[in-house]
Length: 297
Image 1 (cartoon, rainbow, N blue to C red):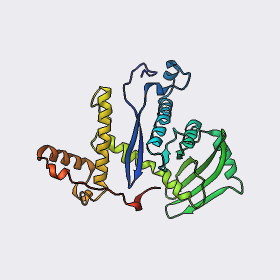
Image 2: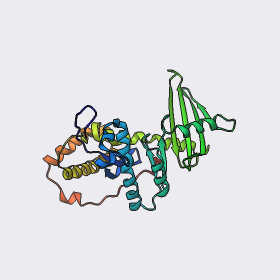
Image 3: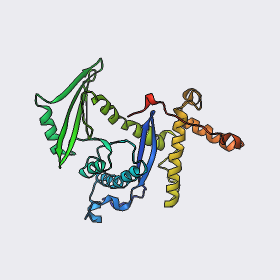
Image 4: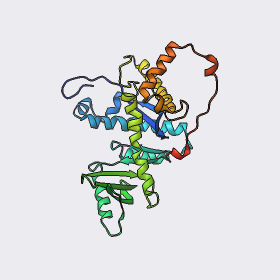
Protein backbone atom coordinates (compact mmCIF):
# COMPACT_ATOMS: atom_id res chain seq x y z
CA UNK A 1 0.00 0.00 0.00
CA UNK A 2 1.36 3.41 -0.97
CA UNK A 3 1.02 5.99 1.79
CA UNK A 4 0.89 9.80 1.79
CA UNK A 5 4.65 10.01 2.49
CA UNK A 6 5.39 8.02 -0.68
CA UNK A 7 6.49 4.90 1.18
CA UNK A 8 5.05 1.48 0.42
CA UNK A 9 4.06 -0.79 3.31
CA UNK A 10 3.59 -4.55 2.85
CA UNK A 11 1.47 -6.55 5.30
CA UNK A 12 -1.28 -9.15 5.59
CA UNK A 13 -4.24 -8.32 7.81
CA UNK A 14 -6.77 -10.74 9.27
CA UNK A 15 -10.09 -10.21 10.99
CA UNK A 16 -10.42 -12.64 13.87
CA UNK A 17 -13.55 -13.86 15.63
CA UNK A 18 -12.71 -14.96 19.17
CA UNK A 19 -14.76 -16.69 21.84
CA UNK A 20 -14.24 -15.31 25.35
CA UNK A 21 -14.68 -18.03 28.00
CA UNK A 22 -12.90 -19.09 31.19
CA UNK A 23 -10.53 -16.10 30.95
CA UNK A 24 -9.45 -17.32 27.51
CA UNK A 25 -9.80 -15.76 24.06
CA UNK A 26 -10.23 -18.66 21.65
CA UNK A 27 -9.99 -18.16 17.89
CA UNK A 28 -13.14 -19.44 16.19
CA UNK A 29 -12.95 -18.15 12.63
CA UNK A 30 -10.73 -15.87 10.53
CA UNK A 31 -11.28 -13.71 7.46
CA UNK A 32 -8.41 -12.34 5.41
CA UNK A 33 -8.72 -8.62 4.72
CA UNK A 34 -8.44 -8.15 0.97
CA UNK A 35 -6.81 -5.25 -0.83
CA UNK A 36 -10.15 -4.06 -2.17
CA UNK A 37 -11.60 -3.90 1.37
CA UNK A 38 -9.93 -0.54 1.94
CA UNK A 39 -12.23 1.06 -0.61
CA UNK A 40 -15.80 2.13 -0.09
CA UNK A 41 -18.15 1.91 -3.06
CA UNK A 42 -17.13 4.22 -5.94
CA UNK A 43 -13.82 5.20 -4.28
CA UNK A 44 -10.62 5.39 -6.34
CA UNK A 45 -7.04 4.54 -5.36
CA UNK A 46 -6.38 8.28 -4.99
CA UNK A 47 -9.25 8.51 -2.48
CA UNK A 48 -7.68 5.68 -0.48
CA UNK A 49 -4.25 7.37 -0.39
CA UNK A 50 -5.85 10.47 1.17
CA UNK A 51 -7.35 8.45 4.03
CA UNK A 52 -5.85 8.19 7.48
CA UNK A 53 -4.69 4.77 8.71
CA UNK A 54 -7.64 4.64 11.10
CA UNK A 55 -10.11 5.30 8.25
CA UNK A 56 -8.53 2.54 6.14
CA UNK A 57 -8.53 0.15 9.10
CA UNK A 58 -12.21 0.85 9.70
CA UNK A 59 -13.23 0.28 6.07
CA UNK A 60 -11.15 -2.91 5.87
CA UNK A 61 -12.53 -4.46 9.05
CA UNK A 62 -16.13 -3.52 8.30
CA UNK A 63 -16.01 -5.01 4.80
CA UNK A 64 -14.32 -8.19 6.06
CA UNK A 65 -16.85 -8.50 8.89
CA UNK A 66 -19.68 -8.50 6.34
CA UNK A 67 -18.19 -11.73 4.94
CA UNK A 68 -17.15 -13.25 8.26
CA UNK A 69 -20.41 -12.94 10.19
CA UNK A 70 -22.61 -14.75 7.61
CA UNK A 71 -19.98 -17.53 7.37
CA UNK A 72 -20.02 -17.92 11.13
CA UNK A 73 -23.82 -17.99 11.28
CA UNK A 74 -23.91 -20.61 8.51
CA UNK A 75 -21.53 -22.82 10.50
CA UNK A 76 -23.42 -22.26 13.79
CA UNK A 77 -27.03 -21.52 12.76
CA UNK A 78 -28.60 -22.05 16.21
CA UNK A 79 -25.85 -20.77 18.48
CA UNK A 80 -26.86 -17.66 20.49
CA UNK A 81 -23.94 -15.25 20.22
CA UNK A 82 -23.06 -11.76 21.33
CA UNK A 83 -20.53 -9.75 19.31
CA UNK A 84 -18.31 -7.44 21.37
CA UNK A 85 -16.37 -4.95 19.25
CA UNK A 86 -14.51 -1.65 19.47
CA UNK A 87 -15.42 1.81 18.21
CA UNK A 88 -14.64 1.00 14.56
CA UNK A 89 -17.81 -1.04 14.25
CA UNK A 90 -20.87 1.14 15.00
CA UNK A 91 -22.34 1.58 11.50
CA UNK A 92 -25.78 1.14 10.03
CA UNK A 93 -24.48 -1.55 7.65
CA UNK A 94 -23.16 -3.77 10.43
CA UNK A 95 -26.16 -3.08 12.68
CA UNK A 96 -28.45 -4.28 9.87
CA UNK A 97 -26.24 -7.33 9.30
CA UNK A 98 -26.40 -8.31 12.99
CA UNK A 99 -30.17 -7.96 12.83
CA UNK A 100 -30.33 -10.12 9.71
CA UNK A 101 -28.09 -12.84 11.18
CA UNK A 102 -29.90 -12.79 14.55
CA UNK A 103 -26.79 -11.70 16.44
CA UNK A 104 -26.70 -9.64 19.61
CA UNK A 105 -24.06 -6.90 19.61
CA UNK A 106 -22.34 -4.52 22.01
CA UNK A 107 -20.17 -1.89 20.30
CA UNK A 108 -18.02 0.81 21.87
CA UNK A 109 -19.30 4.25 20.85
CA UNK A 110 -16.96 7.23 20.79
CA UNK A 111 -18.23 10.78 21.30
CA UNK A 112 -17.87 11.82 17.64
CA UNK A 113 -18.89 8.53 16.02
CA UNK A 114 -22.67 9.00 15.63
CA UNK A 115 -23.30 12.56 16.87
CA UNK A 116 -27.08 12.59 16.22
CA UNK A 117 -27.57 9.43 18.25
CA UNK A 118 -25.44 10.72 21.12
CA UNK A 119 -27.22 14.08 21.11
CA UNK A 120 -30.64 12.46 21.42
CA UNK A 121 -29.36 10.09 24.13
CA UNK A 122 -27.97 12.96 26.23
CA UNK A 123 -31.26 14.84 25.87
CA UNK A 124 -33.27 11.83 27.05
CA UNK A 125 -31.08 10.98 30.07
CA UNK A 126 -31.17 14.62 31.21
CA UNK A 127 -34.94 14.44 31.63
CA UNK A 128 -36.47 13.58 35.03
CA UNK A 129 -37.59 10.26 33.51
CA UNK A 130 -34.05 9.40 32.37
CA UNK A 131 -32.56 6.08 33.51
CA UNK A 132 -29.62 6.39 35.89
CA UNK A 133 -27.79 4.50 38.61
CA UNK A 134 -25.10 5.69 41.02
CA UNK A 135 -22.77 3.32 42.88
CA UNK A 136 -20.01 4.26 45.30
CA UNK A 137 -17.24 2.44 47.14
CA UNK A 138 -13.96 3.41 48.84
CA UNK A 139 -12.11 3.93 45.56
CA UNK A 140 -14.61 5.34 43.10
CA UNK A 141 -18.01 6.75 42.21
CA UNK A 142 -19.77 5.22 39.18
CA UNK A 143 -22.60 6.96 37.33
CA UNK A 144 -24.38 4.86 34.71
CA UNK A 145 -26.97 6.27 32.29
CA UNK A 146 -29.00 4.32 29.75
CA UNK A 147 -31.87 4.65 27.29
CA UNK A 148 -33.65 2.18 24.99
CA UNK A 149 -35.19 2.49 21.53
CA UNK A 150 -33.37 5.57 20.24
CA UNK A 151 -33.99 5.89 16.52
CA UNK A 152 -30.96 5.78 14.21
CA UNK A 153 -31.73 5.54 10.49
CA UNK A 154 -34.87 3.52 11.18
CA UNK A 155 -33.23 1.17 13.69
CA UNK A 156 -33.91 1.12 17.43
CA UNK A 157 -30.61 1.46 19.33
CA UNK A 158 -30.04 1.07 23.07
CA UNK A 159 -27.29 3.18 24.62
CA UNK A 160 -25.28 2.99 27.87
CA UNK A 161 -22.91 5.66 29.19
CA UNK A 162 -20.75 5.06 32.26
CA UNK A 163 -18.66 7.72 34.02
CA UNK A 164 -16.28 6.65 36.78
CA UNK A 165 -14.51 9.05 39.16
CA UNK A 166 -11.40 7.90 41.00
CA UNK A 167 -11.62 9.43 44.49
CA UNK A 168 -7.88 9.49 45.06
CA UNK A 169 -6.76 11.00 41.74
CA UNK A 170 -10.07 12.77 40.95
CA UNK A 171 -9.68 11.58 37.37
CA UNK A 172 -12.62 10.46 35.24
CA UNK A 173 -12.98 7.59 32.81
CA UNK A 174 -15.90 7.61 30.37
CA UNK A 175 -17.32 4.76 28.30
CA UNK A 176 -20.29 4.51 25.97
CA UNK A 177 -21.77 1.45 24.28
CA UNK A 178 -24.63 0.66 21.92
CA UNK A 179 -26.50 -2.64 21.86
CA UNK A 180 -29.60 -4.26 20.41
CA UNK A 181 -30.36 -5.93 23.74
CA UNK A 182 -32.96 -4.15 25.85
CA UNK A 183 -31.32 -2.55 28.89
CA UNK A 184 -33.00 -2.91 32.27
CA UNK A 185 -31.87 -2.14 35.78
CA UNK A 186 -31.67 -5.89 36.34
CA UNK A 187 -29.36 -6.73 33.40
CA UNK A 188 -27.40 -3.44 33.31
CA UNK A 189 -24.34 -4.75 35.19
CA UNK A 190 -24.27 -7.92 33.11
CA UNK A 191 -24.27 -6.01 29.80
CA UNK A 192 -21.45 -3.72 30.98
CA UNK A 193 -19.46 -6.71 32.23
CA UNK A 194 -19.83 -8.37 28.83
CA UNK A 195 -18.81 -5.14 27.07
CA UNK A 196 -15.61 -4.98 29.11
CA UNK A 197 -14.62 -8.57 28.26
CA UNK A 198 -13.15 -7.07 25.08
CA UNK A 199 -10.03 -6.63 27.23
CA UNK A 200 -9.61 -10.42 27.15
CA UNK A 201 -9.56 -10.31 23.35
CA UNK A 202 -6.87 -7.63 23.38
CA UNK A 203 -4.73 -9.12 26.18
CA UNK A 204 -5.33 -12.89 26.29
CA UNK A 205 -5.89 -12.86 22.55
CA UNK A 206 -3.81 -10.57 20.38
CA UNK A 207 -1.22 -9.37 22.92
CA UNK A 208 -0.31 -12.94 23.89
CA UNK A 209 0.01 -13.95 20.25
CA UNK A 210 2.12 -10.92 19.38
CA UNK A 211 4.25 -10.36 22.50
CA UNK A 212 4.01 -12.38 25.70
CA UNK A 213 3.64 -16.02 24.61
CA UNK A 214 6.65 -16.18 22.30
CA UNK A 215 4.51 -17.20 19.30
CA UNK A 216 5.46 -13.98 17.48
CA UNK A 217 2.34 -13.56 15.34
CA UNK A 218 3.76 -10.47 13.60
CA UNK A 219 7.01 -12.19 12.56
CA UNK A 220 7.47 -12.61 8.79
CA UNK A 221 7.67 -16.41 8.63
CA UNK A 222 7.16 -16.44 4.85
CA UNK A 223 6.40 -14.16 1.92
CA UNK A 224 4.28 -16.78 0.18
CA UNK A 225 0.58 -16.00 0.69
CA UNK A 226 -0.48 -19.66 0.92
CA UNK A 227 2.26 -20.42 3.44
CA UNK A 228 1.30 -17.35 5.51
CA UNK A 229 -2.31 -18.55 5.74
CA UNK A 230 -1.20 -22.01 6.89
CA UNK A 231 1.22 -20.57 9.45
CA UNK A 232 -1.45 -18.19 10.73
CA UNK A 233 -3.83 -21.12 11.29
CA UNK A 234 -1.11 -23.10 13.07
CA UNK A 235 -0.48 -20.12 15.35
CA UNK A 236 -4.17 -19.96 16.28
CA UNK A 237 -4.20 -23.68 17.11
CA UNK A 238 -0.97 -23.35 19.09
CA UNK A 239 -2.35 -20.46 21.10
CA UNK A 240 -5.52 -22.42 21.84
CA UNK A 241 -3.46 -25.34 23.20
CA UNK A 242 -1.32 -23.00 25.32
CA UNK A 243 -4.43 -21.37 26.82
CA UNK A 244 -6.02 -24.72 27.64
CA UNK A 245 -2.83 -25.84 29.36
CA UNK A 246 -2.49 -22.59 31.28
CA UNK A 247 -6.10 -22.35 32.43
CA UNK A 248 -6.81 -26.02 33.17
CA UNK A 249 -5.42 -28.58 35.59
CA UNK A 250 -3.72 -30.61 32.84
CA UNK A 251 -0.31 -29.46 34.09
CA UNK A 252 -1.29 -29.10 37.74
CA UNK A 253 -0.43 -25.70 39.21
CA UNK A 254 0.71 -23.98 36.01
CA UNK A 255 1.99 -20.73 37.54
CA UNK A 256 3.95 -22.55 40.22
CA UNK A 257 5.57 -24.91 37.71
CA UNK A 258 6.30 -22.55 34.82
CA UNK A 259 5.52 -18.94 35.79
CA UNK A 260 4.56 -17.89 32.25
CA UNK A 261 3.39 -19.24 28.91
CA UNK A 262 6.67 -18.21 27.31
CA UNK A 263 8.71 -20.32 29.77
CA UNK A 264 6.36 -23.27 29.24
CA UNK A 265 6.64 -22.93 25.45
CA UNK A 266 10.44 -23.08 25.62
CA UNK A 267 10.41 -26.15 27.89
CA UNK A 268 7.73 -27.84 25.80
CA UNK A 269 9.68 -27.22 22.59
CA UNK A 270 12.85 -28.59 24.21
CA UNK A 271 10.94 -31.67 25.35
CA UNK A 272 9.55 -32.31 21.86
CA UNK A 273 12.96 -32.00 20.20
CA UNK A 274 14.93 -33.98 22.79
CA UNK A 275 12.50 -36.72 23.82
CA UNK A 276 11.34 -39.73 21.82
CA UNK A 277 7.63 -39.48 21.01
CA UNK A 278 5.38 -41.94 22.84
CA UNK A 279 2.79 -42.95 20.22
CA UNK A 280 0.61 -44.82 22.71
CA UNK A 281 0.37 -41.73 24.93
CA UNK A 282 -0.89 -39.38 22.21
CA UNK A 283 -3.58 -41.90 21.21
CA UNK A 284 -5.29 -41.56 24.59
CA UNK A 285 -8.59 -39.69 24.21
CA UNK A 286 -9.34 -36.85 26.61
CA UNK A 287 -12.33 -34.57 27.04
CA UNK A 288 -12.02 -30.89 27.91
CA UNK A 289 -14.86 -29.16 29.74
CA UNK A 290 -15.18 -25.50 30.66
CA UNK A 291 -15.99 -24.46 34.21
CA UNK A 292 -19.53 -23.08 33.80
CA UNK A 293 -19.07 -20.72 36.74
CA UNK A 294 -16.48 -18.81 34.67
CA UNK A 295 -18.44 -18.70 31.42
CA UNK A 296 -19.60 -15.34 30.07
CA UNK A 297 -23.17 -15.37 28.78
